[in-house]
Length: 158
Image (cartoon, rainbow, N blue to C red):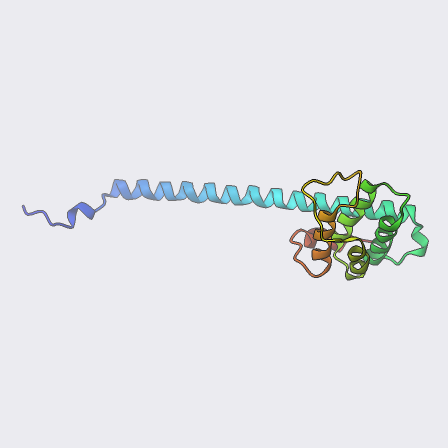
C-alpha cells in the first residue's frame, strides 16, 4: 500500500469531533465574555446617568426650579448657575462641569470656555481649584464630541 503525501493532512472523524467541540466551547466563552462586557457597559451608563440627573436635580433645587425651563435646558441652566456661583465649593463646581459635559448642550459652551485656560497641570485637587481637565473634557463633549454613554440615559430627563 502506497502512502500519499497528503495523508498527513487527513483528519480522522474523532479529531473533527474534537475540533468541533473546541470551537463550540470557544464560541460560548466568547458569547459569555461579550455578554458580561455589555452588562457592565449598561450598568456603568445607568450609573453615570443617575449621577448626572442627581446633580441636575440638586442644582435645580438650589437655584429655583420654577424659573428654569423644563428638561435638559433646565438642567443646563441650573448647572451653569452652580458653576458660576462663587459661594459654592470647588468640588461642587467641578461636579457641575462634569454634568454639563455629560448633558452635551451647546448652550453651556461659552460658560465652559470662559473658565477653560488650556493649562492642565499634572495633578489637580478637586477641592482647591476649577479642574481644567474636567473643563477640557466638557468643552469637547459640548462642542459635539462623542459621548457613547449618553444614549442610555438622556431620554429620561424631565
